[in-house]
Image 1 (cartoon, one colour):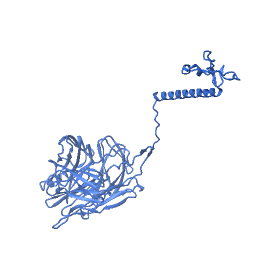
Image 2 (cartoon, helix red, strand yellow):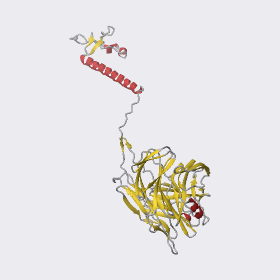
Image 3 (cartoon, rainbow, N blue to C red):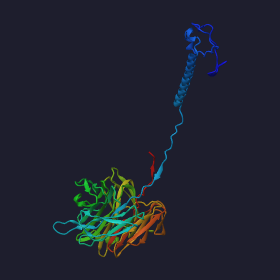
Image 4 (tube, rainbow, N blue to C red):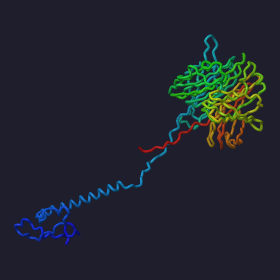
Length: 518
């Protein structure tokens, strides 16, 4: 039979060897209930405790048995759970929800070089603006402002800003100046710059008759602390006043290089800024005897690199330049490349001057000693437009100098390498106004393969490792794009004047940011 309270459990009759120690006073009115199964613990109890109990006692024991079984079941379940915890299982990590957000475009600002600089007359000469610039800005919805605080009298620079709410997506600007004083004459042009933390200025001189001004413009809202590192033909120059230069927010500083490095023929200047960013340029002028012989605004190389490309190096009236450039015993009107390996290792350099069309170019190799500037002149170039490609075993900085001779004298220009424009990128350029009697040319160079270039809707093909020159109007905006990497610049020329500007790729657009939930 089975226990009615525990179905299916076999019944064990009471043992005959364990009679009750005290018989009940009255016989039970009902047959005794079968005893519950004995456990090993129960089998050790005295025989008297195994005797039949009253109904209440039996009910309590039955409840206790059920509780024991429940505890046993609970313990088994806990043991099973504990075992599950210690059994290796595949790691399951839920992938968090994420989404990309593209930040709004911020304001884009370009800083222009400002007026041509010179010295006032009198017992206490002051640096001053001697010719105001002509400017071309390109882009819709632009806002122009002035950096009013300047070390130069009337020399304030202009800031061209594309606000983030403007309808246009790009901005470009360039300026030209054409002074005609007893000390400074010629044509200079420069593209307006995005302020940066580092810049390399390759050009200028502080020998007799040569003036070089370092111009630092801070268009931001944060003061900048600037340090200058100067290297020249005899190596690094240690001089006081080259660190801790404060350029306050909304201020332009104009520093004479001759006050830092005296009688230096071939300077290269590294500009490093902390705090705010600055736009850094050089202005270089020459007086030969009593005759002003040119002005140039030198824009910066962004960083040392193992390859540089200058799309435009014009050689104009080379024989007349050679004859006139030696009138004061100098040779700095001759076409030359200035190069510097700023690191601690010498650089093996291969350079090529590639003429437009089918002319004969020049290819040669040289070695740059570390931290020593080399000016490499060329005296036998035929007249024409050349592209310059320089490749080095170590990162270097460089630029090219050339001059133009005409009926009214000489003018010089420093041409800085132009960064590459990547394929498929639409670029907006501004061709500077240069006044009457001067024209502009657009120079394109494709270093890595044939490039199909669209210029204001017109399609041209630039052969691989070759240059192409196009006439372009002055005081104009130009839109271009290319199917292959491309370097581009503009040259300006007229009787006794020469200048150039670079076409720069647009600043990096705002990139999407991946946002994860907290």
